[in-house]
Length: 121
Image (cartoon, rainbow, N blue to C red):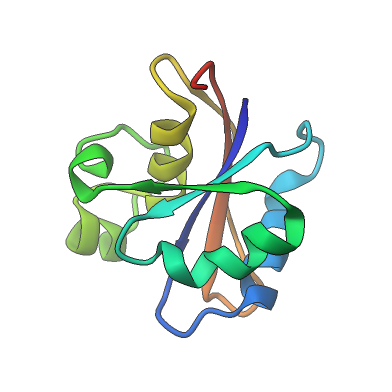
């Protein structure tokens, strides 16, 4: 399973998500699942539909405490994790997941995307 995890600001657009995904995707296998925090996942649904992919919603409790290589003060404050995108990708990919790509920031700085692989089904 290849998971694209997203973190984003309110007001992020489908174009923001697509740009973040395209940047993160470079050199990685095709994504099979999108993931985002459950309180913001609805904003990502149009991208999931357009790509014909499922969308995993990740609770704050599952995000909190996951070890991420990136540490953003904003993510720490809002979700208790260094990178929401990296944590969402890892959580959705399941136990033993590894990051293939640390977070990539969209050019408009509204969304981040990270890619993880794992064995979750």
